[in-house]
Image 1 (spheres, one colour):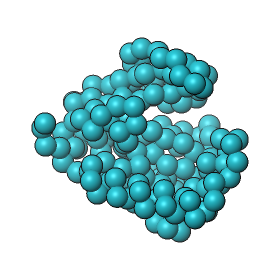
Image 2 (image 1 turned 90 degrees about the horizontal axis):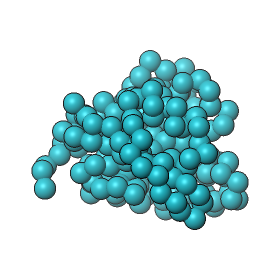
Image 3 (image 1 turned 135 degrees about the vertical axis):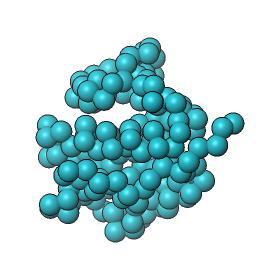
Length: 167
């Protein structure tokens, strides 16, 4: 297996900061996950999830990072690289933002920074998997040069698999 560089865990864009998780993110992370409509996860459970994310980052050298707006300093979601349905060699890019932050280009901006971070690791390809119904996320990936590879059917419906070669 080729050795990859560790991705940068502090990313800045014109409007956003992506940084490592802190325990203080637990309440906001819980509120974000509650927007999925399946209840609000207990903050204690989210603290455990954050510890697991940090441990996985230490082990894999890739990370899902909280996203905050630079001017306001508020947590608006997360974006980063995960193994997900893919592999450490060809990880998935993942993102989720509060609904109040949708439609302003934040997902594209954050994912663009993560794409650059992935290139810096020496990887050759990324994946993303998105529910076929999630048109805004599919549009973000299209803007970033991802192309549809195939569709699979899972419990929650059709999942579109997209891929992007890295320079």
